[in-house]
Length: 305
Image (tube, rainbow, N blue to C red; front, side, top):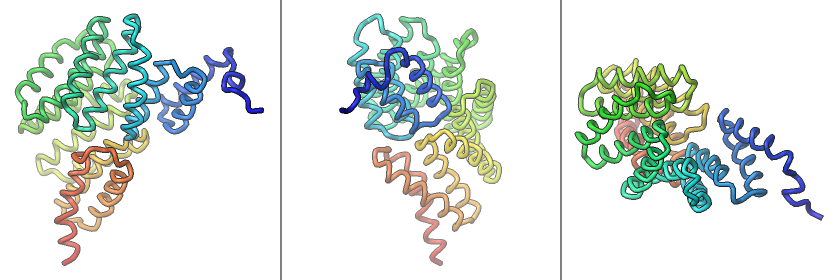
């Protein structure tokens, strides 16, 4: 007779199982963490927090459909107004998933709701993160000045914030926009400060993104060798934590660097695997593949000569 999950994992083992799952998540052992949280959900499918945890991992590694499914479960299960912290995390995660998909209207709605809940519970860190993500929507829609104003205004409020993620997200987002509008050194300084904060608090995902941004500032200046070195550092971290989305984006930028340096065969060595990973993921948005496609076209022409 098959044993039920509740028999295999009795109540007095629950805390140990949760701690194990969360430790696996925090150490970026992504597949093992997914398995551990799924075991917990098999025993307690109504646990909204576990759905959020497993959704966060799926989002990181590019499984957007699975991420959205679990965030939606969490939203349904955490409908009680007393569970605002869980609701905030679920709305934020779903909003970020929509943002990655390029579904900006839905992303805006979910992120605004998460921001509202965060402010009601005085969770400044989550509110800062939501505002940073919303700035990406504004920028993508061509509303650069409102995006700049939003980020610059929020950064002035971070001085007393004891949790660093939100401030780093704001700095990286503002650095991206500053670089894109030609304010290169301001962009560099924002990324550099974000990098120091991320390293101090051992936030590998944000460290990778800050290095990626710094590489982009150097590439914008035509400094391709320093840019390449920064991209390689960022790529190493992205692969260490399994962040497939940033992995593909960085690989595309490395391809552009190598292409500018005339290293056509090296470009192919980076771009082809990036494209394969994007295609295997299937649900990654096209704009995450664009750098790779842009780099490939002239590269093939040069190699064929």
